[in-house]
Image (cartoon, rainbow, N blue to C red; front, side):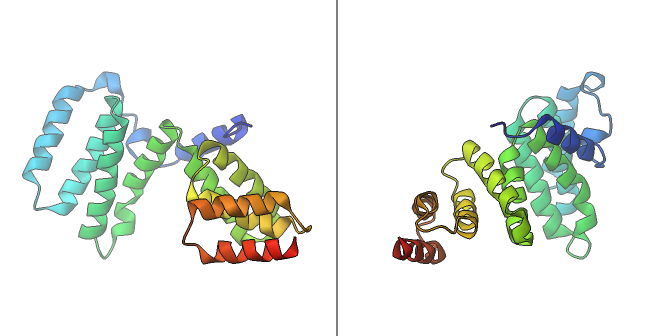
Length: 202
């Protein structure tokens, strides 16, 4: 089972191209002196430690430059710092200042092929919006668990959706998934209660 179909990937990329951010502004690697640009941005960051809004913008640019240089984890760190500083410094209108950083983060996650978060969020949305979408939620949770088998959140969601959809007694798959979810969520009393109900039915 693939993590994302060709159609889904194409649609996602089309949506990403609509974002206003460094990744869509045609800032081409071959037209930039990346070493000089990196030095200037790092110097600017050093001189703006007391001014959070300006530092946030610098970190946003640094994130993109680090991506161009092949340092994706550094890029992610800078973009996350940018978001944090923007929230701290733009208390009254931070949403509009977060549009570009969030766009950069979305593109970076796409470049890194971090589809598990997308699939997980999609699964939870299907699960929470209507019982009509339970089967879609189940499929998404199954896909995301192929990527992150021991993720606590995805195991929990999959257990919930199985409990809602597999009503025959006993449902071995539901019981096994509830146990798996409890292993990754040992403090979740709701999961324990659901397991007790299922075991009582068996």
